[in-house]
Image 1 (cartoon, helix red, strand yellow):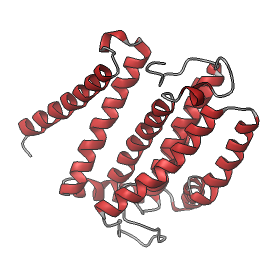
Image 2 (image 1 turned 180 degrees about the vertical axis):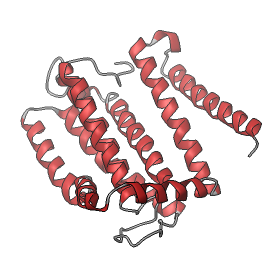
Image 3 (image 1 turned 60 degrees about the vertical axis):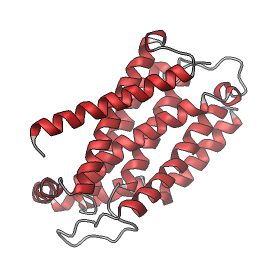
Amino acid sequence: MPMTEELLEFVAIVAALYGALRLLLHWRGQTWTGIPTQQRELLHWMVGLGVVLILVTEDVLTRASSRVDAALMSWIHVVVPEPLTPVFQALTLSASAKVVFPVLAVAVAALLVKRRLWECAVLASSLLGSVALVYLAKTAIQRVRPALWETQWYWGSSFPSGHTLTAAALATAVYLCVKRNWPQARWPVIALVSLWALLVALSRLVLGVHWPTDVLAALCAGVLLALGVAAAINRNRRLAIGFDSHPHGEDLTRWSS
């Protein structure tokens, strides 16, 4: 695609996403300048992630990224020492269903004891939403997994990376929960969960079971999913405040009460 066409496509996507946001705000009786600065910044981030997700998905569907994907995979296979493979296998395992479901079940049970409905809803919905989204996307797109070297078999097609999308969604959900209850700890937490999600994404490349565009799209989709889930849950006042009369911290995803 010529550079001019790519630029026009980029501008069109950005304009469409901002237009959709303004229509949503108008439907809710709000204006762009009438929402808090932090929420506008969050919406800018969401638009940016949406643009990347759309462009990457289009490249995957048209196979425009195939050559770059293959080159990056070959480079990773050369530069990452083979003795580190077990480390990346463990990172992949940390975002698998056999780990995240039991861990999340314990976390949700503990939060229910503390009567934190909002946190339970965000964590559980982010996980279940990621599973549903991965299944639908894999079934619809049916991208062939890399076969550059012998790898372990995993269910489903290559796009998107399910482990990465789940990790990104849970990392975002955990950050939102921590920011809501312990805002002073939000920066160390976002550093830790971001590192985990990125390492999970890298592990899928090192193990040779996903293309780079698979994990890039999955990172964007996972973050957007968790933010969307939190915003939707905030529309339910009972879930938004849980059993407390006043939740701790300011929630970036609260557009309005």
